[in-house]
Length: 406
Image 1 (cartoon, rainbow, N blue to C red):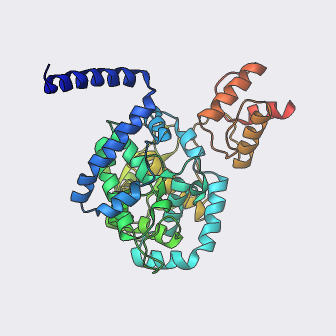
Image 2 (cartoon, rainbow, N blue to C red; image 1 turned 180 degrees about the horizontal axis):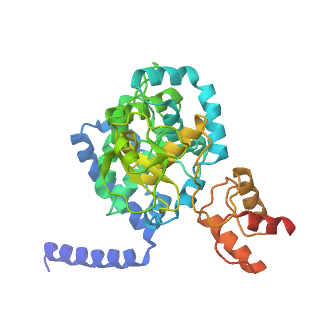
Image 3 (cartoon, helix red, strand yellow; image 1 turned 60 degrees about the vertical axis):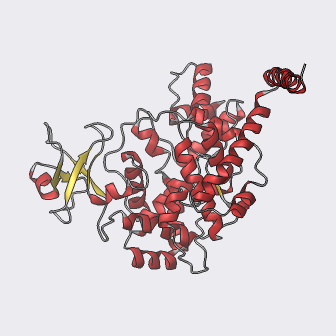
């Protein structure tokens, strides 16, 4: 047998043995090897996109495997089907309003400058800050914040649905490192790569980030002026109309109303009126009627700035929550017509108490953050089953009273 054929036979045996070994070895080891190969291969793409090889190598020098938390989050993101009251109760509440008012006082000199420069209402910016990171509190949580480079590389490598998005965002994130605005050890964000106090994805950061405090860096992680100015810049560039509101809570007459956009004056002629009894401003402004909780719930006329807020997050509920929270931070008394909530609402502190008491019963092991997510709802339902209540999972005064007895 020739040397060549012997070598070929040996190679075939080795390949088969390697394959057998591969099938026996645990998955993560192969995922890691495949991930490292992907990282090595993507280097040329990043360099072609304007990232220096040195920056790329430095960014990945301690990243040798995908982030399993990111892959789990990507797999388990639920479709959003929560009722209106559930969404708004978790975002527009006494605590988010009180902290927003504190921040308005604390950052007033900078908010004055940002408002003067960009023409965007300060209370809208504060509401976005609350919605995106709970006024920066989320950035302090190690269980939430991830290395942005690793997260995006993980999605690009291991999530076919998000691969294209993640590859684009990864190149943009590497360019952020290249500018020196932040170093790789502090480039932290959500599992999907949203960054900083006001949660910008890397490409949005490139378009809208601002060095408001004048220190030579566009630092949306540590500089509140930079973060709020970036949000103001985004809204301004997407058409924010200075001095105008996002919309109005209204009352609507019985009977069918026409769909589509009409001027505020035209809506008024159809019997639509402000819920607080005040007149509409700028009657020639176009507005769209929305009833997110049905005709028997609160109704709203949305004007141009509402759609501008959706440039941040293209969901009506998000933009409405920003607008409602902004109004309350500014001093309004909240909705005239409340959401169709099938139980007695708890205050933020009472929601925290609910979580603590569920924990004392061994039913809840999450944070006492007043946010009613799936963990809290499951704990409530379990408790309701033990005491013979309807298992609806509602964070109600009725359930809290039962918990206080035990």
